[in-house]
Length: 162
Image (spheres, rainbow, N blue to C red):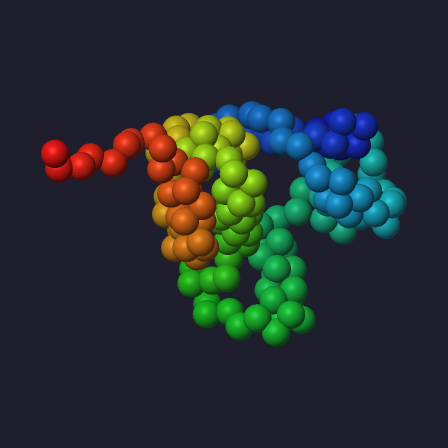
């Protein structure tokens, strides 16, 4: 409960994959959804308790989370190809990353200038861990490369035969 700050719209992520701790901002729509969830939950709101809780009030197990995810896929009529083949919960992270880079590129932000920001947000130890998202982004949104080429065309002047 202490790791979610609705005044600043920030979530503290602890004990992540790389044993790092970081603060990440929440958009107003995410903060609103989490606020509504908290109102509907109405139990065990003490600061030391988990924000997302199991029915008994403790931590949600990975199996329970996976089961809920499968139910959402079923309701959305999204086929599941089996455990490990997807869609996976982790695919939300990939989708977020690709669309974030796409949005940054469409705003004229150089993708390689955006990488350190996204890398920190995702909790990666190095920018190279985030770099693969640039390739995926340009494959899914080829028009981005045209924007990047127009933006960066002045960096290296054309060489002409004299």
